[in-house]
Length: 400
Image 1 (cartoon, rainbow, N blue to C red):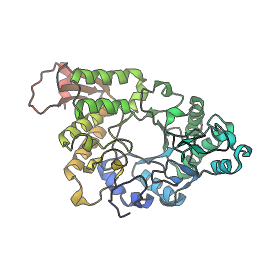
Image 2 (image 1 turned 135 degrees about the vertical axis):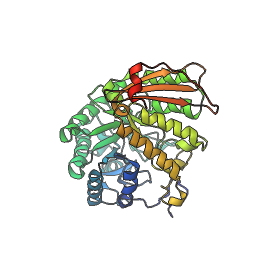
Image 3 (image 1 turned 120 degrees about the vertical axis):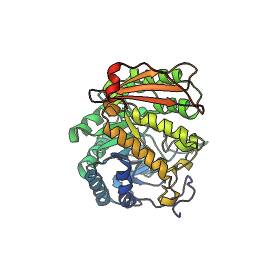
Image 4 (image 1 turned 30 degrees about the vertical axis):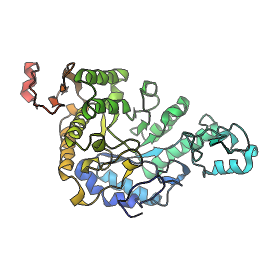
């Protein structure tokens, strides 16, 4: 389809790895230091979560040489690259599942999947095998099977060694057994000790963040808390502070410092649309995101004002026409990133709420380390506000 058309469940627009290479200047100018790609391995759908071949780049995107070039160019710019590992399920065109379809219970791969009965089929709309979300295209893999485990761990190792990627985002990670992820971590960290292991889990995730599985999870509880206060404005400052406090108390400090904090994604409406196109709300939410503990993530296009509702509308083509980009919003995100890079307290300093009262839309918090003491004051309402907050005298020397 022509670039910029309406995204549907089954249409394609031709974006590829070379296109990313063409626009690396955009990422560098913004200040981005890492990129996470949704799946790039061969598959039949436009979303590519139905993997056909875990060892092959989808030809629609490019090939191994093109990925290597992209990763190398990113590294030259100080940008790390994460790929998406879809290990909970494969695609229906995955070779072992094709063998299973052809040979039934005589297939050597029958224990690679969860089969309820043979022959495998769709009965009354329900597959006779376990899948992701009852989707026949995506049969669930038995990661407790030693052959399956060995194969997938080989995949995890291969792309780090061959393409020099910097980590993995793990799709529907909570539906894969814990022992598999423990073994996964051992393999990945042996090849690249500083690789970033990011699990997709939508709820409280302390079980996965004990140091033996993931470095971080996609922090959707953070997303929901920020939406409730800044975007939907359905809670006051005290309720918001309590929600954030609960999150900080659930995980070790090491996990909080690298938590993957997002405000939208390919699975949710876009932030600007959630804000009803109110950029003031969007900016407050983003400012909290970038001055909070953890790793802030921008969903592509948010920085230039891209809008979108529920999936697939949130997966629009990136807007590359400068005349159609919100340059003021881009400059705002640049400023947030530069501020975070300048002051170490915003990256790893102590986080403390100084004012967050019941019935109030006013919020004050501090970030502090041995180098910087920063106090952030926010007014989450349409009315001018006055606020008094007590700070220690020594705060004022380097107050921003």
